[in-house]
Image (cartoon, rainbow, N blue to C red):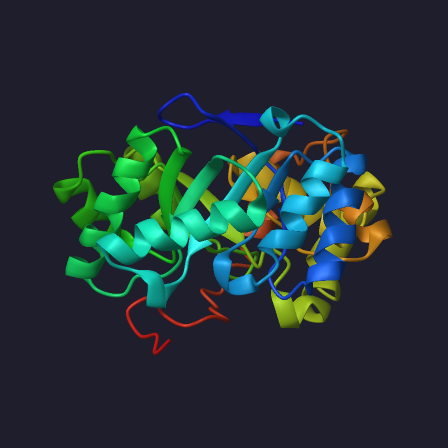
Length: 274
C-alpha cells in the first residue's frame, strides 16, 4: 500500500473501497473482503445509508480502528452550522466510532452555506473528532473561496475523475494549494463497458499482463491521485488492489492522456438540484 501525506501530515491510503449504491448487507460483505485483501481505506457517506453496516464490518474485521482510514460525507440537506454538528454526531453513532479520518462536504450548495458548514467542520476537527477535512464536488472557484475565507484549508477534494475526464487543470490547482485530489467513479460508473472496450487500454493491459481496470487504477497511482473504486464482487475487490507490482512507463501515460474527452457523467457542481 502507498500512503500519501495530507497537508497536516495525516496519511491517506492511495486506494480505498467506494460504497456508493452498495446496499447495507452488500457493503458489509464488501468491506470485510476489502480489509481481508489489504485495503485500509473505506469511503462512505450519510446519503448512502450504509454507514451502520460499514461500521460493523470494520469492527468485525478485528483490524485495529487506528489502521483503517474511514471517510464519510455530509449530505446537502444537512448543511449549515448547527445541522452539520448534528449530522456528524449521527454519522459517528452509525459508524460506531468516536472519530472519522476524513469528513467531506458532499456537494457545493452555495458560498455562504459552504462557509457556514465548513466552520462547523473546522470546530469538529479542532476537537479531534475528525483527522482531516475537505470537500467533494468542488471546482476551482469553490475551492478558492474556502482558501480565502477559512481558518483551516481543505485537505482533500473528491471529484469525478476517470480516463475520459482527467482533470489535469483542477489537479494542478489542488497540488499548488496542498489539496489532495481524490477520484470517484474512476471506472466510469455506468459506462464501465465503454472503458473496458477501449483498444488503447486493452493493448497497454496486455503489455503488463494486467486487466484494463488494473491499468486504469495504476494510472491514478502514477498521478498520485487517491482512488476509490466501488465493487461488491469479491474477485474484483481483490483484483483492484493488485496494482502495486508494476508501473506504467511515460509512453503509456502519454497514450492514456490522449484519451481525455472532458466527459462528465455527473452534474456540474454549480447546477445540482438535490
